[in-house]
Picture 1 (spheres, protein in one colour):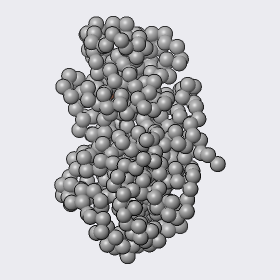
Picture 2 (cartoon, rainbow, N blue to C red):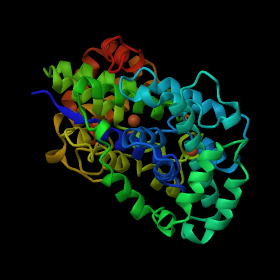
Picture 3 (tube, rainbow, N blue to C red):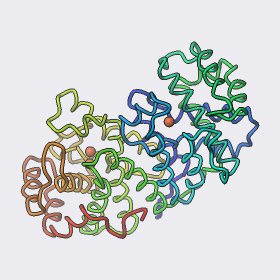
Length: 412
Ligand SMILES: [Fe+2]
Ligand SMILES: [Fe+2]
Ligand SMILES: [Fe+2]
């Protein structure tokens, strides 16, 4: 049976993943979507256009994996390097069949209204400027603290009004001022309500079912955002996915089962987006406090993936990659009964690929050194003996899968 996934859930999951990069200003993309949509409603945009605007807003910071870059974008409206993430988001979305529709709006979401390219469609120009407006509103709210947005209404509205005609479209500003007159607009920006606002939207145009290979493109997109977080983890998720697939073939899986395993590998570290760059790139051992932050990542992976209907057990296979057969892994402390063969494969692939890469605190291991480390994990009751044996039997094949981009990779 072919698994089928609802694109709306996939977009919301992608937005949950991007939200993690905000760390302290959680839900930035979702608040931008609300502010932009409420302003679009005042402009009389039809439902179809509003849905597109919401999707573009949710994903607008797709090009930002680094917590430091995110922080800077919030604080400095005219930071010279701000366009890099717009371009990167555009490039990530352009090849994807459905999401390419919003690529242009994302490409220009830091371009002043007066400087938008003349060839841009009216819809893309307006959407990009509405995102810019909403992004500025949210940055101001964050500076003042998000506990009571309504209290800060006047200062924000006045500041936005001064940008009409230069940074922002005068019509968009007028519509924002009208939307902002309602107290509900501001009260709804607190986390609890943001969540239900978005869940309640029908987003009918995005209620399409995509099949598993197409979902592989979304997973590949997410994995490249995760892998871009640190120079040390370049292509880590992709390597884990390829090796998991390779080992899956070795245990006799085929068809959809292999595609699912590959998706689990691509997404296993998506929760790492919430770990500050300083911790991921730290050149020494982590302090207990830093380690407790790092340990959150596989839990976050689970929370994001389990909300995608149709994904079945993939969420567990991905999120259990730091669990151990002896029950001393994290964060759920699953024992052997809950660790499916696929989860054990992802765990072995994760350790293998990480050993093959340099880390801030150690060099990369050569292929022939890896079995010693893996067997040590088997002895300590962490990794599965049979899967490790399989990975080591064909060390060359495992090494190639873990370290080279293979042509059959999902999304290629
Ligand atoms: Fe933003
Ligand atoms: Fe991990
Ligand atoms: Fe990993």
